[in-house]
Image 1 (cartoon, rainbow, N blue to C red):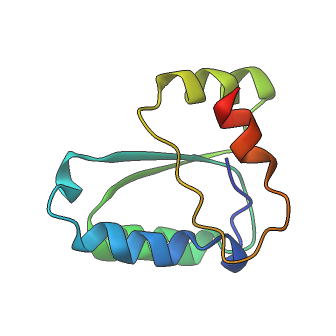
Image 2: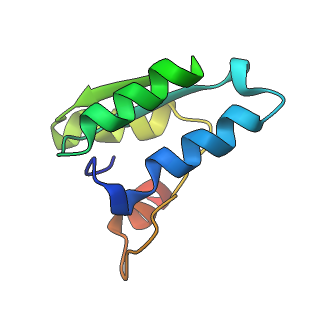
Length: 90
């Protein structure tokens, strides 16, 4: 889950993912909203990556998404105490 803002580094991560050899075998689910949504949607369209912006999700849905996931990524450029790491580990 992420606030869709520049500081979360999603756009940078998508550039890196686009360079990965297995990029077409990855589906990335991003629950959250924010003012950088249009830019992220444009990056998704440009790269053709399978990235799904899920919008705001209730806590129960986020827990289910964590349980369905094979990995967790924290591309934040700045975040002094990311709670998402604790949530993902839990």
